[in-house]
Image 1 (cartoon, rainbow, N blue to C red):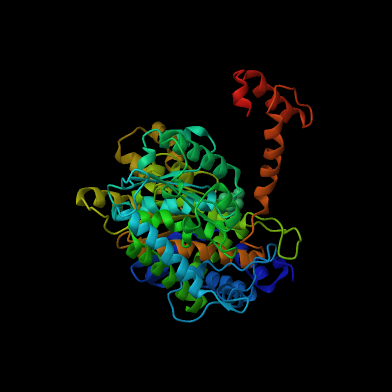
Image 2 (image 1 turned 90 degrees about the vertical axis):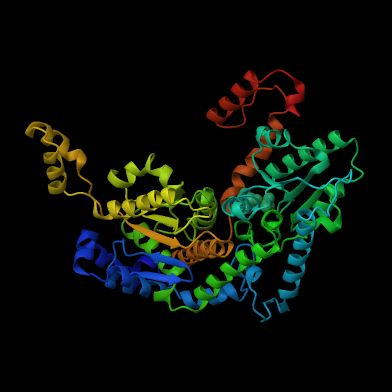
Length: 554
Ligand code: F6P
């Protein structure tokens, strides 16, 4: 492949950047009264306003040329048609098949996988509806009151985020809990209030080998056995979602409670699969179908809309513009809907595990930056915490703002105030406050001249800080499905442009390997000298200070 930075589109963007980097969005808005109409897109109830970005028509044309030069349209087709684009694992990345409600066959290796997907989904729904309707009974004949999903990464973050986001759609007398942390306080803190007779576990792990999940799963089983007195009816309380059927059976899960994941679903793209069991239990089959339908609508849009009107493509190109030309190292995701309070955490895995790579598809080190640091928080909380840096810091942090036009139980007083902050923040970040405006403001406060001059530098806001705003009617399952799919595809497009494989995650392996070795070194009180002095020092300090009980070593 031609070196990305030597391609005509890249060189043209570089030149364009040099000539226009000081353009201020204030001026762009002053010069073009149609800027909002020209730089915003709609899909169903979602308005995507990207007019508060440091782009002109020319910028967008050049970015779209970059996308074309990267053969993006062909890559999109490869994604949807099940090509093995995850080349390091020889796998397709067919999460889109899981929400495809069309009638066409979905071919993978010459086999139509659509019937298999429908069958697995039907099995998930059947169990979920039995639990929801109280037909499913535990060991003593009582109905299930609490469901605990044990998993981590993609087997936790997606279902957790969706369940929080769609809480208003959940049954109120059936609680769904999530346990991910190896720190025993997570599982203990959860199980402490539960009754094994009315608790149902989902062991969610594609590999069924992830240490965090398996240790928690063993603890859960022991808790159940201790509470009930035996494991005779464990099948009434344990299920598994996995691609590793053998290990799930060995753990003791009954075949009818094992839900299959396919190897062509990446963990971080798996909430649409049986990994969504906890979601279906919480919100029901119809709402889950709506979630899938919202994602499917975006899939169709992504596949069919011209690149210039394609929301995930525009999101991705703006990211590349800031990441590679403005050298912006981070990006923020800032929902103003409280139900989306885990959205940024989930997107962190989708984005950073996908595009945090320094080796390209040819196995060569890249000489440009790839995925940004993604962080985020509920916007209104962020305003009182880290927005200072967004407004007046030395770093450029392009931010996404997501907000509902009406919230689920809309109290007008609350929502009006909330939305005023949404609009105010995007305006403030864009316009800033000039020296003249700041001075006039201080003069109105009738300060003396010396005080004005002393305060003035602190009161100036440079502005020109980019935001893109997603406004949607309300956070329905369908809208949420669409928003998630938009981000998934954004990440894919960026991977295509950076020529990296967004679907593997070799970078998480080294730590896992070392932890396995170190865990065995913690089994006794012997001093360790096999690592560097820092790691030796930390391990030996830990060994010396931990309580002497031998049972803690096992
Ligand atoms: O360690 C990273 C990772 O492999 C993620 O990609 C994945 O979502 C998570 O661990 C959990 O993996 P599993 O579902 O196999 O337990």
